Image (cartoon, rainbow, N blue to C red; front, top):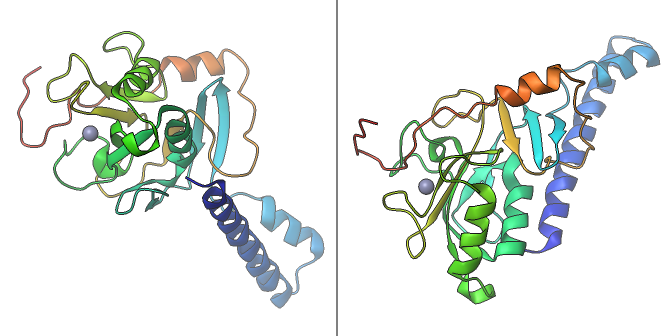
Amino acid sequence: MSPGTFMRTARHFKTTRRTTRLLAATIASAVGLTGGAIAAASSGGGIEPQSSVQLEENLCQTNGGGAFVAIPGFPGEMIDQRLLEDIAWMVRKYKIFITDGYATSGHSANGEHPIGLALDIVPNAATGGTWRKVTKLARWAEPVQNQPRPPFRWVGYNGDVNHGKGHHLHLSWMHSTTKPKVPAETVYSRYCPGAAPPAPPPAEPALNQILKSLPDAGPQHDDAGVDYDD
Ligand SMILES: [Zn+2]
C-alpha cells in the first residue's frame, strides 16, 4: 500500500468538489446571481459529498459519500470507500491480506459483505503477516467475545463457526439500515474518511444518546444459505 494511492483518492475528492463548485458558480453566473449567493450555494448543504463527526477516540460517524471502490493493493476486491483509512491502518499495522470485501453472493444476505462494509482477512505472509498479528487485530476489534468494540458490529474469529485462527477473521462495520448493493447512508469507522477535518462531537447528553444507540443489529454469522435459529 503506497501513500500515493490515498493521495490520489484525496485529490480525486478535491477535484470532484472543485468541479461541483465551478458548476455551481457557472450556473449562478448564468442566471445573474451575486457572489454572496454563490458562496451560499457552496456551503448550503447538498453539495458536500459527505460529513463526518468524531464521536470519540477511534470512532467516527460519516453521513453520505458511500461508494464501492477498489481496495488499493488487493486486485479484484472492493469496499465502501469510507473504510479505506481503516483498511490502510490494518494493512500497515497487522500485515493483513484481504480475501473478500464487497460481495453480493457467498455471504449472509443481511450481513455487511453485500453492502461493502465487511472484510475477510488472513495473514499476508509476503509482508510479514502472521496469525498472531491477525489475532491481535481480532482482539482489538473484539476484546470480549460477542462484545465488539465500535465501529465493529460483528467480529467472526475464535469461537465462531467457520472463523478463527488458521481459517479467517471477519470484520463487520456498523451502519444505518440499507439494502444489498446500496451503500449505507451512515457508516461508522475508526478513522474519519476523506481529507476534510471531522466535526467535533456533540455535547452531552446528545453524544451519550448516540453512543448508546449505535446500530449493532444484524446476523452473528457470515454464512450464506445456513439457517441459524439463534
Ligand atoms: Zn466475511
